[in-house]
Amino acid sequence: MNHLQELKALLKTYQKVAIAYSGGCDSNFLYHVAVDTLGSDHVLAVLCVGDMMSKEDIEEAKSFIKDGQYEIVHVNVFDVDAFLNNRKDRCYYCKKMIMFQVIEQAHLHGIQYVLDGKNLDDESVYRPGIRACQELGILSPLSQVKMTKEMIRHYSQCLGISTYAKPANACLASRFPYDTVLTKEKLDLVSQAEALLHQRGIYHVRVRVHDSLARIEVERSDFNLLLHDEQLVDELEKLGFAYITLDLKGITSGSYDKVK
Image (cartoon, rainbow, N blue to C red; front, side):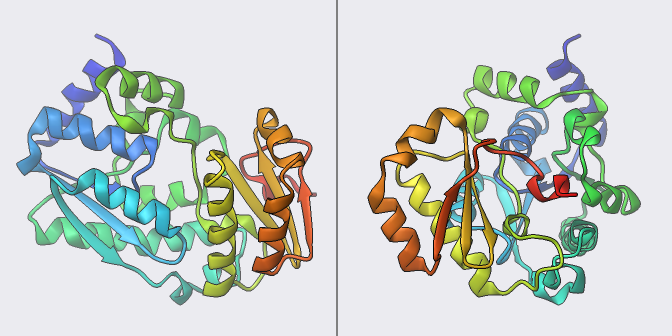
């Protein structure tokens, strides 16, 4: 029995599920496999949207689930003090608030089991939100059957799921140093800046903000595209950045976690 077969067998034991849905590679894969295994009437996608997500990501996520059962819940992440002040453990408190909303929607639909898209690789990196999910009893079937991100992308491609090559993304708060007071305007600034890169065909990108300086992280293979793009510099300056820099390390997950 391969990992995909194991996942389907596990999902069958739940019979009816709600999935904390983001539109990313992992949750979209889980959603499709669950629908294929249990039927669309037995799978509820719960998409929690707020200022922590770009408008691009929100609209794309909505488009993926429009033909199934779903609920869209609007959350105010600024109600979470740890998020507002961008504390290092913000993800724990923010995830707990969001997952409460997902659980509530599941119960309203008479669903006992709530799943998330955590995979095996997530267990080896700094993810304070994982503890919140565990405390709330959220189930992680991808991790349980020991699926890695690489496997999820492989199976997604085999099944024709469009997000198989979608770059990993993260909450917009991750673009700011810890202990920075966050505002809607600051998060919108990052979203607009990264949209400029997306317009150039660069989707695996982080624009890290240090006051008036933008530190752009992209794959090293994309360096040359940026180094000769004077228009991009002008457009970023119009957004309000005084200095535009390219991080020579390339894109790094958890960039601020590595700051000593």
